[in-house]
Length: 113
Image 1 (cartoon, rainbow, N blue to C red):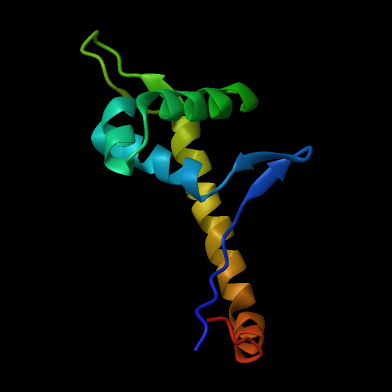
Image 2: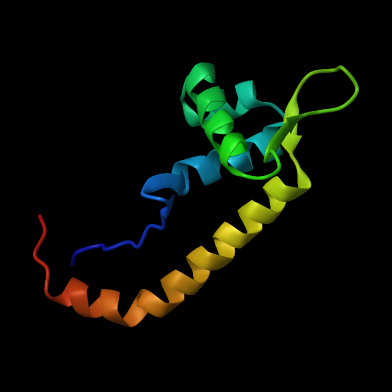
């Protein structure tokens, strides 16, 4: 049996805006409290994580990730960051629910090794 999965990527003006990797990074930043710890947990370099955060922060009206106040270092999601995360997960669920039947039909037609 072929295992088909629906993944969601949102593009804006032909360029990737949000997808599974960026969303996972946002979740890890929120959980770990820093970009560095989130990068380590995901097995990516700090530089790569920072570039992804910068790319997200630059296209939304308000930054999604911000330094934690108090001078102790770390980072977390802004209110907009938490809202974007919630909206992405809602869109993902709606898409997955809507695609269940057609994906099952498609799966029945596949013979992928």
